[in-house]
Amino acid sequence: MKGKIIQTAIDLFDEKGFKETSIEDITDNIGATKGTFYYYFKSKQELLKDIHLSFILDLLQKQEEIIRDPSKNNYQKLYDIIYLIISGIKTKGKSARIIFREMRHIEEVHLEQIKGKRRDFRLNVQALLEDGIAKGHFKNNVRADILAFSILDMVNRTYYWYNPDGEISEEELVNYYLEIILNGIKNRGPEHN
Image (cartoon, rainbow, N blue to C red; front, side, top):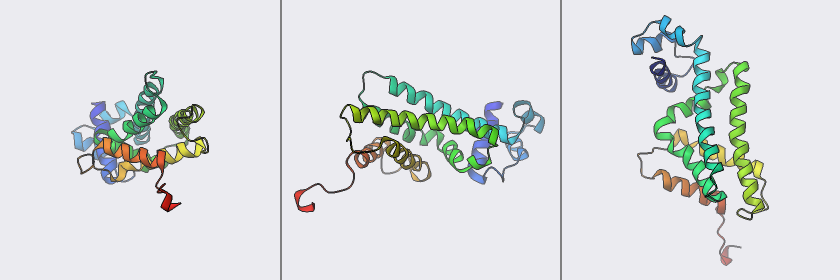
């Protein structure tokens, strides 16, 4: 039942917004009582916090597995991290949109925990970039901290517009992003200098 409550809340929060969705909306959708809701969650706030934490902890665990893989270089790991985010759009796109759109409704006591996990994800990307710079995989004239913010901002916005069933595959999109990240858009031919 807890899973049904969470999934219904995700659907409704994505469709109507957190503030506009009541506990009664959630329970009516699954044919449960408010008592059932309160058995699992103290409040709608706690439910939103759990959705956030579940999403980011899952991403963080998978990201750390990618980073620890000794068989891959930094370029492959960066590809895999971007692919991890993009490939989740099909199954977790609603959760991701809620994460970014409804974060302002998280109580301060829970916000620090969530921000801390998001910071961990970003710092892992930054450390990967720093290692790649040190090993000569990436240019040494870039700031890894700014680049990590930029990459994650670009990739995270994909949740709002990308259709996994559309004309471009997940792999093609990741390759396109990596081309922009690694090579930019400036034409490097001699006639364009």
